[in-house]
Length: 171
Image 1 (cartoon, rainbow, N blue to C red):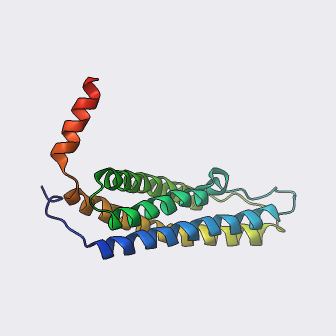
Image 2 (spheres, rainbow, N blue to C red):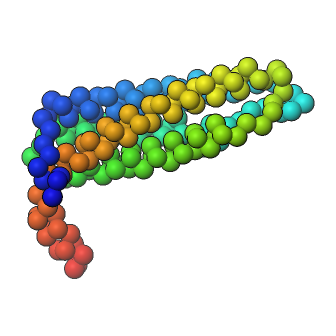
């Protein structure tokens, strides 16, 4: 109902895709920074600091932002290709899910802090600050993905997709 009336220009869609790509590159570079930071820790009495988001590689999940942004830019340039639009829409929905999971893991990480060796405290503190900065970029990615997902609904011919789906499911 509301999604059929939402339209966005192709130039604005390209801008959304480019911002998604830049956010993805930012997340991957911040994960690489954390990798260098945490690998330089010294084993101490209290051990090393290895946060949950670092172990799960949530910074590398920025690759989904890069891929989704590339498909968004491609779909903006070829709006007649409904499969490309559907693929970009699906990837943006995946980005929404990834953003929610990554933000939840970051909040859990920042809520719990076990003591570490005094030698590693500075690195742990800097790593937590990086996680806080990344936590502020997740709503931006969420908003971009949600905006594209809502506005791309108007370009998809729903009847033909449902018709093709029923034909595929019967075979």
